[in-house]
Amino acid sequence: MGPELRTIFLAMTPINELRGTIPLAVSLWHLSPGKVFLLAWIGNMIPVFFLLWFWKNLAGLLMRKSNLIKKFFTWLFERTRRRFYEKHSLYGDLALVLFVAIPLPFTGAWTGTVASFIFGMPYGKSLGLISLGVFLAGMIMTLLTMGVISIF
Image 1 (spheres, helix red, strand yellow):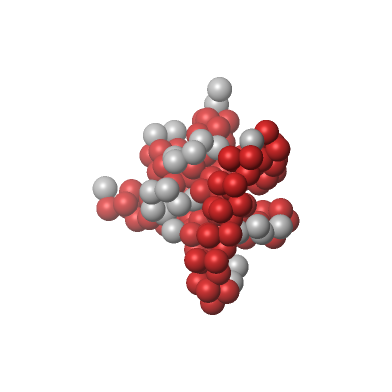
Image 2 (image 1 turned 90 degrees about the vertical axis):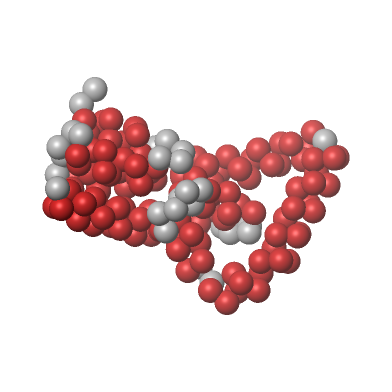
């Protein structure tokens, strides 16, 4: 498997996503930063298409199978939406974009799909906002990687 495919597949993984992929692909596989950015963005977005669909369907299936799980999810959704609605309404969709874009542990596209599911955001809107967040995270990581590499 060539470095381009490795870059895409590595960016698809949770936790690592493109945050770990970009520095690795540029420094280890010597791919150009622009190429790495594009491949990592594509790779990071591939799971998002499925995860946005998956969380909704998984919750629906589990809720149909168990009243206890149905009560839990109902409680979780109501509590989360009630507690965080004020913050979300203040920052609007920017909150999800920034959550995905900031390169910190446990933020990113995978976690962003869970957040959008819990807040009940529509599929298309979630996809667009997460895509923008991943784009910004990729830009940040590419610039950081190039800055670090230029020092050495």
